[in-house]
Amino acid sequence: MRGVNAIDLTADGWTHAYSGKVRDLYFETGTADLASARRVLLVASDRVSAFDHVLSPGIPGKGELLTTLSLWWFDQLVGVPNHLVADRELQGDSVRDLIPDAVAGRAMLARTLGMFPIECVVRGYLVGSGWLEYQESQTVCGIALPAGLANGDRLPEPIYTPAWKAPMGAHDENISFERTVELVGREVAEALRTLSLEIFSRASAIAESRGVILADTKFEFGANRDTGVLTLADEVLTSDSSRYWDAATYAAGNRTDSFDKQIVRNWLSANWDQRGVPPELPPSLPPEIVDETAARYRELIQRLTGS
Image 1 (spheres, rainbow, N blue to C red):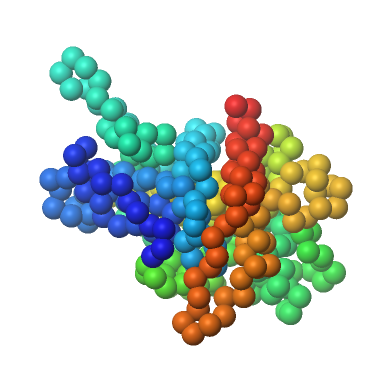
Image 2: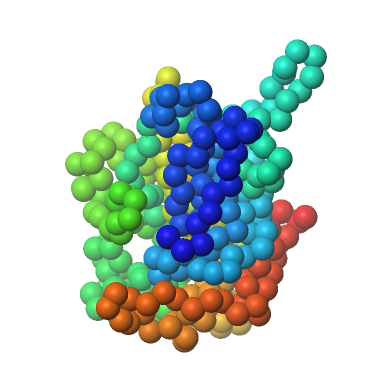
């Protein structure tokens, strides 16, 4: 995969397990394998992806910005169990950092969970692929919606539209709630839906108090291996997993200006037709698109956190 280069952290006691499009996963050296690891290191890179391709160049500082935002949101969601564990420990009379200097600021130390193969998507507004489906059938992921809605309209209430997490290299697939019941059982499926909608509601209220609209997002959950407790995992409410709008800009009628990589998608759509057999690689991003995207990531954090 073009642009994927994980940092070698062997000297720091971490073994590279695998790399996704934008993140790298490590387990503690000395552990037999990832399946038996109790703690893992999740590293957010500066890579950026769109249309199932890793693009070049990356977005400078993106990994640290998204990690900062995830950690901030975990702090806001008091009462929701998450996967984070202490990233420092006592060693004799001194404190040792468990996160290597090479990835400091863009890594999270997390407990391993029994992950559910579900992306828990919540949509509060009609936009993106939801808007495309609505124009054809007045539904979003099979859920009937009122007639007469326009692109970017707020939905009468948020809707839960789960997706099946496909194996690496395959495409995720939107699925019905009943399909999630088949995959994880009714009790877990209902708990995933309830908690996803609850977190979305809480996060939306926090964002709105800061003049930001949370249009949609996706969560991932796993079961604590010791207690079975449903646990929020992975990144949460970042610009890569969520769609945010400026409330004032939205009120003025602009429903496309978001705090995420939409700038990248728009540029690619205008400059790359994705044709060819096999499809040609996407072009390199121009410096102004890279800079503008980085600025939007930074602005969102400043708006939400005040720092």
